Image 1 (cartoon, rainbow, N blue to C red):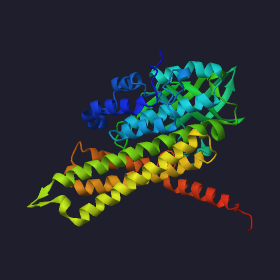
Image 2: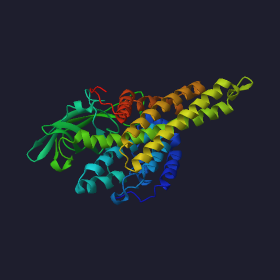
Image 3: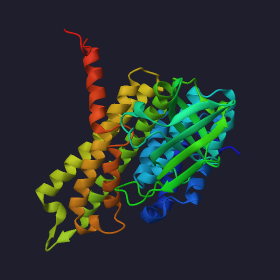
Image 4: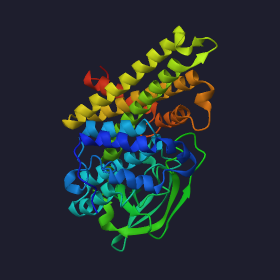
Length: 382
């Protein structure tokens, strides 16, 4: 089964229509997780394979179209947007580094929602530095055996297939591991600060055997090529989702200030409130601008698109965290109440500053790129 063909222009409107219908339920997902039925709804709307090419069953959205989908879903639920992110990360890796058989097997299934993906990279000793992964991938009688313990895997509780990053005699290796294979076990994670609806899990691979045909690219290219493509796609998606989250918080805070009366005075009459709203609006607009620039560079294949995505993810996640916190302050008790959208956004935004590259690491990448363009190389005297 393939996802219905849609045009990139129609996708953002489809995303808006879907999340508007689901908006009232989003708060409940913090305790239940995003339901399987909602995942199916995303697939049926052509959103789960939004930027998978139409030739492979997807909707074929360009970077800006896909980004706008993430922004509109991110306005309502960060966990739901995280599903688009991880699905897209694995699909991007398969599209770029998979062979014809791997693309034919996995891309239509990912687009149709017949397979939900998990990106199994992080470990207890390998978060920011994925080169330190301890998971072992080795050849066994014509197959590949995978052994390791992955942590904090988004939709790991639900995933049908994992893109696993490990290491072996040939170096870092990326391999697709079906969740129903013997030796795969998962432990749901709950109670975390944010992304409470994203069905996180710790996943163990105990000498799991898969066909050698499940390996993406050659051993030694798992981190530098396969995971790098996935992470680049993830930053693009997270950045746009954060821009949408910031815009949603601005709208909710402004609506509250315009209608809330304390004593005989409307909240919006206070200069400090209006100034805060102005700062929030500027931060949200700046986040969107960074995302749009990254999408333009990505669309034309500009080599600078990778650093642009890092900058967009860093700037947008920082804006989302700042704007969401300010929105909670302006809403007061309403912003802290159970089920509050801005309260949920504030918790999620704190996580978004960490995933797919922490703020400090992002700043180093952007700074190093800037210096390189001015001729500086570390360890070399000017």
